[in-house]
Image (cartoon, rainbow, N blue to C red; front, side, top):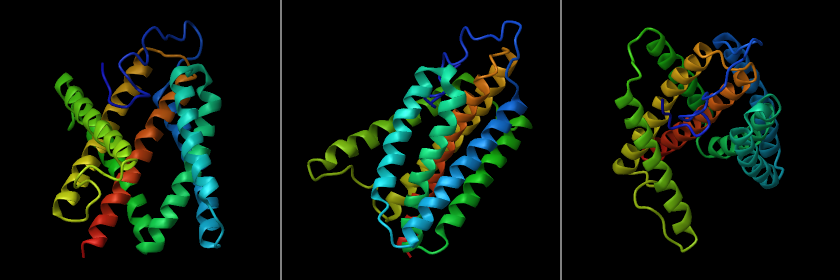
Length: 243
């Protein structure tokens, strides 16, 4: 098995069994994902209101982005800590999402609502397609999504490094046709990662992974959803700017 999501990788459930204890279930993972979503919304709303109240949110953004990254790494390497670190990750990411969403909203009214609805619509549509068998997770499908996600990661990394020298990767930030098409492609790849996440969660339940893996799997889903939301937000902003 292979996934492009670093938190739900090839060896995620390897060697993990409940051994007579309570094992993870799909329903349990769904419940945990819902809890993480609510926690994320709480801090996102807080940062959102701080921004529109005229308060400086730079510190909150850095805490959210930096803290979320560190907690995500801890969760990935210490899976047993997921019942504690996954909720903390959701709270921290909410700080970043709320602030960034507010900044986009101040430029393009209504864009946040559109991005949220499109993200949730994509989630439930792909879940339905996966459960109905319309989308089948084959080895070639996994390899294709893994390769595409890796390519996107290295492009973003190169762009991050180049910005220190006053340069950037061509087209990815532009609002013209090529820039929009690139964003569409990235959104598609991010969405397909959800399908891999569904597959890995199902495999974990089948292999009777320990109960704490429900929190870990919910964390993995949140990582993909946060990425998808940001990419949809960027795509919508490009479309608005191009009018």
